[in-house]
Length: 145
Image (tube, rainbow, N blue to C red):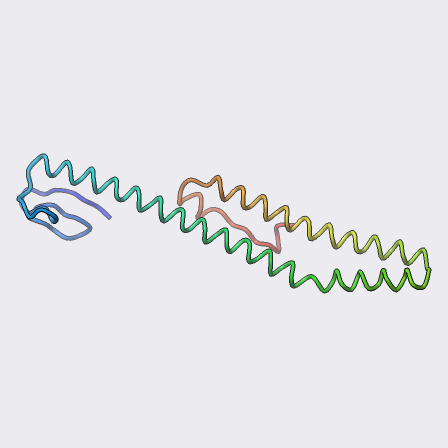
């Protein structure tokens, strides 16, 4: 959006021309032009900051949901590994117990890697200060391992 003054057309505010100040109805003069421009710029900065904050919150929610869904979708693997470990312990097969524990540990380590990648992405997101940086930011739970 923009705000600029033309002597013959008045103040152009977001594509509309105003021959008088939109809030006071008084004709433009040099003081009112400068005051309005400063106020307008401050409003635009505040709006951009609010938009960035909302977009970051939306991205943070998306990260958390993706990680939650990924961990939930993969929970059956952990349960299966726990069942295999329990069967090995009940049968007393030490070799199978060792393999089952190693497999379970591997699955748990993968889940922890997903959580760590999520934590890192959240910290990176918190450090973002411009909308351009936010546009460049990506997080894919499937390739973040």
